[in-house]
View 1 (cartoon, rainbow, N blue to C red):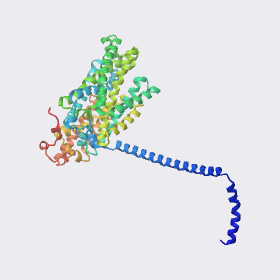
View 2 (view 1 turned 30 degrees about the horizontal axis):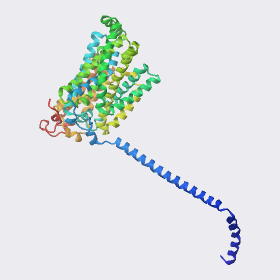
View 3 (view 1 turned 135 degrees about the vertical axis):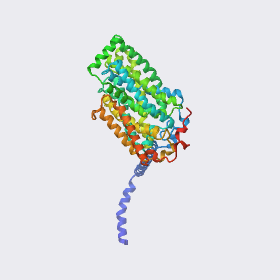
View 4 (view 1 turned 90 degrees about the vertical axis):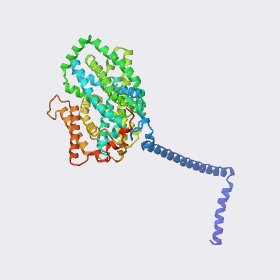
Length: 528
């Protein structure tokens, strides 16, 4: 820039400086202060946004870490729990006699007995047909449950572990997932029954609200395992027995006495008769899932007689009693659910009946939900708490519409479930002579084609007889027939393979003679 340009620039700037100079200082200071305040606010707001973003990011990270920890299996923590699903129980984890028998009564007094009795009362004369059919059906369930109960006691293993011995580490997904879905179906029926007890219908807002509440209640209680079920069982049994006895008296009295009731029962059964075989099959189907997974509870027993007493209490005492109560209600009052006719007896009687039914359903819901939780935890290697939420939510959703199909559901169970246990019974009692080695759990065979094939054959025969696909004599009981066929099929396959010097299933893994194996888990059970 030359001198002339500089001079001209000075002349142009001077007026501007003069104008600025004439602006009062208070104005200029205000402008500067405003600018500074605005800048400060912007800086503070930016700082707050940064801190907020960091806080949200931190909280998100914490939540994700908590969710990951909740979802991830901690085998050490599970091993210290009261009902570790991933390994045989230790002697310290087994429970005393009184808690086990209390649990058996609570588990046995499930609402399924009432529902089954009501169905039978509508088509089977009470004496002697219904009494005999329920005795035969409950005895079949007791025998199956007793065989499984002993295995659970001797091995201290749950069903998920036991099925791995016979079906294999991958093959076990067949029985476990199948049983988990079936028991969740039972859970759904219980959720629906809970809603019906309070609403007395299936399509009102009250039904849906109470059913959802019941499903969530079962889920929360089951979250605490066996201890949670035990706490519910004690008051449930006492109230349900008293209500059941009163229901028997009320129905017989309203019928006009014992003789009048028997005559009414014969007339009712003649309208829609149910055959003896069908009646037995319904009884078997009502509790066969419980019999097949009996090891879930008997593994806690310290003595063999306690392990065998559990299925006896459940099948022969509790369920038979409830079936009789349900049959009486079905004949006289037209409903197996005693809340329906007890509510007509006044607020006090109806209220007691409603409380008794609710507690019974609470016990039923907890027990049914506990079963798929333990099995799938053992197979999928997930914490019990995760499986409780998964199966609890699924059972609650299904419960809004499955209860109405109770009869069809237990018929399906009676056909498809018993053959699942056939290969295990033969493998444990006959092939391996009551010796399973816990050390082999992590190196078991992948899958056992003989067990899968045997189940498929047994299930096909039972299903075919139940639904008329196979033309076999009507005297055959489908549930029992399917079990026997699966057992015979597995035994035949195993011994034919042995004759050809080929090992099937667990026999291909265990290389030491069973009687010489000091680590056999059957040797770790308490003294009998």
